[in-house]
Image (cartoon, rainbow, N blue to C red; front, side, top):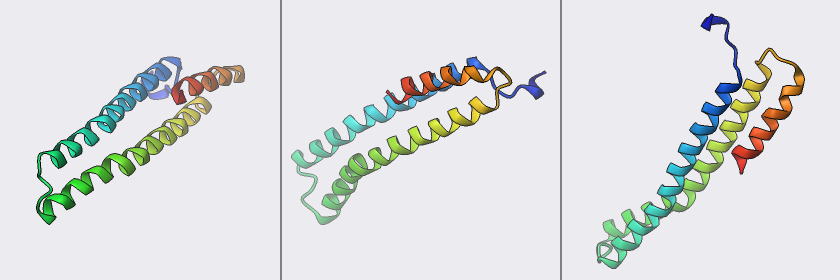
Length: 107
C-alpha cells in the first residue's frame, strides 16, 4: 500500500531531476540578473536616486541572493537525501548507492 511506502530508489531519481531543474533555474537567473542590471545602467535608468537604489538592490540579489539560494538548496537536498536513505527498508549496503548519488547531486 502507498500508506506504508517509506522510500525507494525511484524517489532518488525524482530527487535528482528536481535538483537538476532547480539548479538550472538558479543558474539561468544568476546570469540573467547581472545582464538586466548592466542593461539598466547603460540605458541611463540610474539617473535618479530611486533608480540607482533599485538597480543596486537587483545587483545585490544577483550576487548575494543567488549564492545563498544555491547553499540553501543543496543543504536542503543533502538533508532530504540522508533522511530518505535511512527510511528505506533494505540492506544497509544500499547506503553506498545513496552516497554515490549524493556525490553526483553535489557535482
